[in-house]
Amino acid sequence: MTLSPTDIKILTLLQDDARMTNQTLADTIGLSASPCWRKVRKLEEDEVIQGYRAVLNRKKIGLGVMVFVRVVIDSHSEAEAKKFEEEVTALEDVVACYSIGGDADFLLQVVARDLDSYADFAMSVIRRLAGIKEMQSMFVLKEIKPQVSYPVKKPL
Image (cartoon, rainbow, N blue to C red):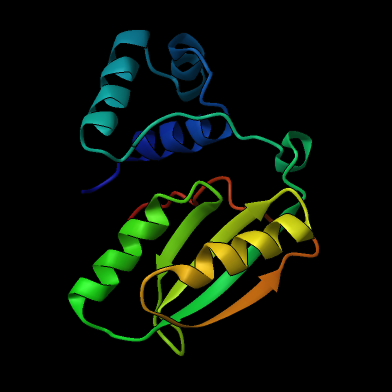
C-alpha cells in the first residue's frame, strides 16, 4: 500500500491524539470534513489503522514492574511453536510477545505489581509453559522511550 502525504499526516496526528474530532483533524491537514472522514475510513478498512485505545500509566494502575523475558523452546516444530504462542496469548500479564531471531526464540514483555508478583508468575506460569528450554528475565529499570507510536514515512 502506498501512503499519500495526507495519509501520513492523518496517521501521525491520530497517533498523537486518537480522540481528535474529524473536524479538527480536517482543519489541521487542510481538508474539508467529508474527504477527511473518507480517508480515515479507508485507512481503517485497509487495516492501516487497526483500532483506537487509551494509553495508560502502568504505575498508576498498580503495575510497578516491567520485565522482558527471553525464551528458548525445546523443539522448533511448527506444532510446538504454535502451542507456545497460544498459551502466551492467553496470559494477560504478558502484554507483548515477539518471535525473534538470534539466540532465543521469543521475547515476552511482562508487567507485574512488584518483584514478588513477577517471581511467582515467572516460576508458576511462564516456566510451566509448553516446551520451554530456557528463560532469562531482564528487568526494566527506567523507561526512557516507551513505544507509543510508529514513525510514519512515505515509502521509497
